Length: 176
Length: 192
Image (cartoon, rainbow over the protein chains, first blue to last red):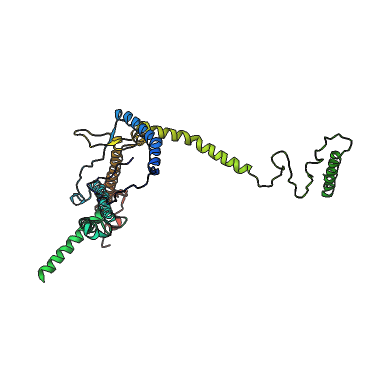
């Protein structure tokens, strides 16, 4: 069965279910059904699962996440060094994927917070929303409008244009 | 070969002969049993008692044979490899199980198949496919070869241009006649 989520990351609010006071003398049918299910289905399945787990504990093996070394960036490559261009491009693509996953996680965090809080999300989720807005602005500045055929070269050119625009804005602000 | 009128006549005769044979008064019959199963007496108000599971009917419906045969064959051929595959994969998932995620220990370089979770994927990666590092280096080799080819082509074009212009290289040399064969006698006296 999949693990439950990390309670520190997505905390559950306190439950407010009322306490039930039984007033009838008849036995509770829900308990009967639950007990039947427990002994007929739950116990054998759990026993089988424990047996298999004990067998697997003896023959454990692991898998790891890949760790890539950092290579020189596209701006640090010499002109005409196509192998360097290739490695820089591959590194840029991996970093792009990582950034997409980061954005996904931050989005999901905000959505989960909104779902949890319900109507009072505007004041209770302010931190998550602010984090998302910051991250989204950075992501947009770097990767937006590169298109489907975006590569590291286009991204570098976009950065260059951004820096030129900033410099122009600073100069305009200094003049006025 | 009979014509259709002859065939109709023959079938009518056959029906009549059959009925006559059944209604033969000379044959001994048990009493109480109706003469012909088809022609049951239908007295209104009395339910017909047949003694077995209802009156035998000839039900007219379209042919099921081909459809049933197709479905039987389909099930057979799907399950022929489906059941062993299902059993094999279930056995692997239950008894061997998937790998667990762990941090890479210090000073240990994992093999290229140890980056995958499912045991079948690991097996395939280990024995069938090339490691991704090899693929990456193959791509880099292709890029390098193409870059060298492009550079050499540019150099060759440059060399061609220079040799053609200067004429002092091994290319663009054209065979000419021997200088001593030229007859200079018309030019010996310029003012003649």
